[in-house]
Length: 204
Image 1 (cartoon, rainbow, N blue to C red):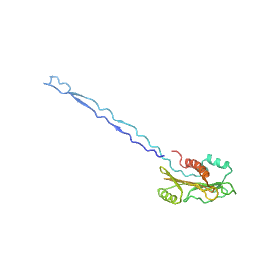
Image 2: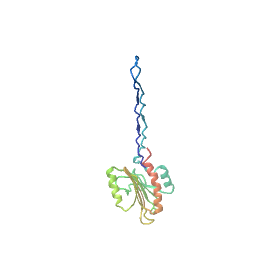
Image 3: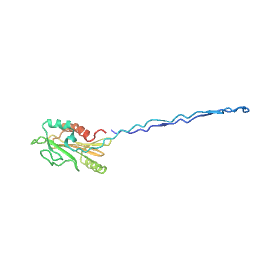
Image 4: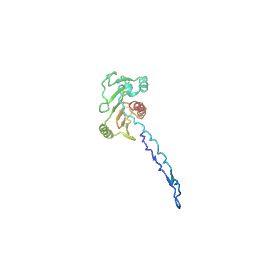
């Protein structure tokens, strides 16, 4: 994920001065004692420009958090918006499973048990990142690392334990929480995560 700028090498050629020596007595008409060649110009290879790292962009709506494509797919299955930070949804004000002050959106099927799920994200300072990392590492999740991104997962099961997915970046935190767990549900949540990541970490 991380590209590194490479330094260009500088090549310089020194000028060569050829000197001619004189033998015997000097002639009446002095001749040039040598010719001087000009030094070739210095050649500098261009320095490759490092690709800009994506940075966390805080969403301002649930559509902005999920992306219109994912949100439409979820609503097309019969899910509805339960709660959004802007006060919309049929159950506004539902607290988040993510600590701090996340932008949290809850969806599900009204009056259907274990249909509820949350998608949340928030920016992190370096200090908050370190505290969040330590906290998640103490919760018994399965932890994987790819560069600077650390992912924490818990599959849960299909009746009593939720499925939980956290993706921790140096400057941001994404969480997907589903009351209905299991390996299949977790696999679906990972697909959702890719859409959410593209929203809060747009390509520069």
